Length: 105
Image (tube, rainbow, N blue to C red):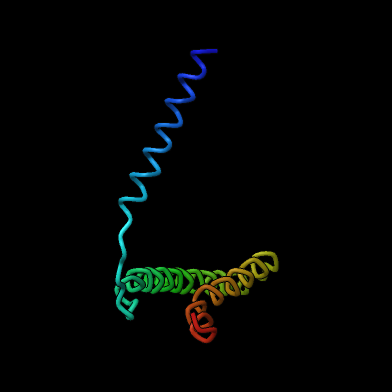
């Protein structure tokens, strides 16, 4: 019983000291009204990701257009169907930055 009280007292002391040190380390921060310095890296990352997605979409679109042309030449309806799905996906990926721009992102 005595051992548990010692450990509990030690734990209370550690928690109290940690809380006190945490409170002492807080300081007031005066932020400027312009938040561009904080959000600019995130905006750059967003722009980069949208550009990469758009570029991959254009590549997928071109690949599937060629695949559709070959399937049309060989009258292969299953491959034509698959290529059309790829074309739609490529158009969606290529146009995602325009759609997000219209929405205000």
